Structures are given as C-alpha cells and as structure tokens.
Image 1 (tube, rainbow, N blue to C red):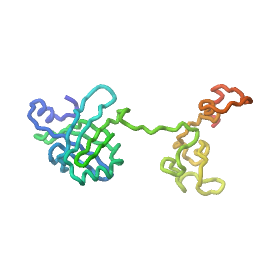
Image 2: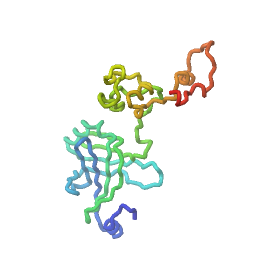
Image 3: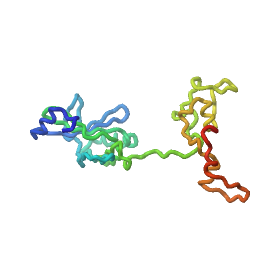
Image 4: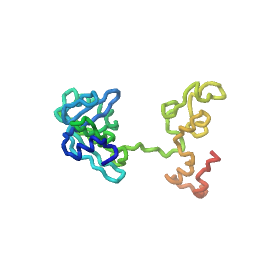
Length: 232
C-alpha cells in the first residue's frame, strides 16, 4: 500500500467493505468552495452534492500527471454566477481531489493540481485539473530576451522603495526614474531583480535579427559581439 494510506484505510480497502465519496475543494480569494458526490460533512465543513468524477486518477512513473476532469451538475444559479464572475480568478488556483472513506471518516489525497480550464453553462460546470508538472497544461510566461530591464520602475517586480533603497547621490533624494540598464539597477540596489540578459549587446542583436546592408561595416566574430561580465 502507498505510504500515505493510514492503517485504517488499508484495512477497509483490503476488506472491500467501505463506501467512498470524492471531495473537491479550491479557494478563490478568501472563500473556499467544497463539492462532493453526496452531501457530506467532513472536518466540520459541508460539501455540496454536485460533483461527478469524469476521469479516474491514474498513477504512472512519468513526470507529467494526466489531467483529471470533473463536472459540477445541477448547481444553483448562485454558484453559476459565482463561477462566471470569478472565472478568470479560478483558472490557475490550486485544487485538491480526495477520496473519503465514509465508514471510518478518513481521506486519502488523490490529486493536487491547478484548475487549467473551466466551462460553465446554466446548470453545470466542467473543470479540468492539471498537475503542476504538466508542461502541456500550463501556460508559462514568455521571458523577453532583452539586455534592458523589462519591469516598470518601482512596480512590484522592480521593488525599488523610496527611503529604503539607495538614493540619487546627486540630489540625496530617491530616484525618480531608471534607464533600465544593469549599472543603473546596481546603483538603485535592485541588481538581484534585474531580468535582462547582460551579455546581449546591440551588435549581437543586430547580427541575429539582421540589419540593412552597410558596405562600411566591419565583420566581427561572435566572441567579439558578446560582452564579458567584467566589462558590464
């Protein structure tokens, strides 16, 4: 038996005597939503009886975890409205699918992943759960290959804070702008947040992306186009 199964669960599985019920839970903001195949209460929480498990959870030795599809059927109009209103917020949130052994009131976690897709109509919602290790079901932000910083100065990604990070030595006041190059980032104490590729030079970019023919241009090697770190 898997190590995450309690001895009680192992016993009822071996005896094939326990009824089971699947539980689905996820949180959007400060609200946690709970659904089950029957109206049950577990650990003091009430689960609404709208859940239908469309695909079984399969265990394999590959890194990619197969998506699990569930349906919420005969849901209330209030739940439909909630799912529609928070649709964009629901996608990507963590969801947990468990199997509750009713006779012993104990659970085993079958799947922990994220809501990759949700389709809603007037009385039902189809939800696809994708594992965190599934590269085909996740949308990964594309990083820009730029020598310059791509953040907005003082936003949450940049993190520069007036009065906390270094001030402009010429005015002794907090920096009001940033040229977005690495040296400017160092001066502002935010070099650990710099997202650019400091070895990408203008010449290297032009050599890859192309430029208008210039008869006077001098041919340069790739090693000459890549600036060493100590020169930055």
